[in-house]
Length: 224
Image 1 (cartoon, rainbow, N blue to C red):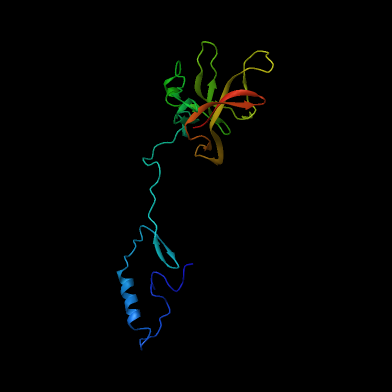
Image 2 (image 1 turned 90 degrees about the horizontal axis):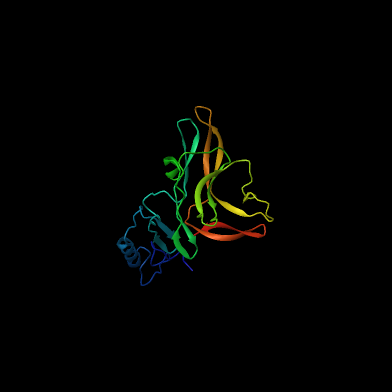
């Protein structure tokens, strides 16, 4: 157990024993003083922790990541020329399975330049959900990945993208994966428009998986 009598400042102990006529200001005290002077000083820049039996240097830890890059799926907000709030998405990676390293790509055919640029130009309002819309493969029609905005006022958890037929149970033809929810801060800007912010939900690479919902399987994504 650490001792309060023996520490880095008093390596020979607080209590000094008189011996052969030596008092507390004698040889032992002088030796102790010299040992203390020989101890290297610790820079205040590196930090230290004072313990009962001495001082321990704590080196600074380097921050992970470095570079200050934008994380995957980061949803940012900006005002367009019409004063509407638009969402921009920093596209991440999606793999075709947990054990499949082939990456999936987003649909760009017939999409304008703004939408090609990682979701820029998508107008959002409070309680919208910025998400990935994944449409399943149908025969010779390949599967399709798109960025989309799920409208406010609809329960995201209960939403099902059903094929427009009378199959029972209905055939699910697409699913959505949330990236961020748009929140109202309760404040307004100089033009009396609501100030919005994002509640980020996804930041990792994703992998396509099968999950069970309401008793039948659907395709979705999981952090990878």
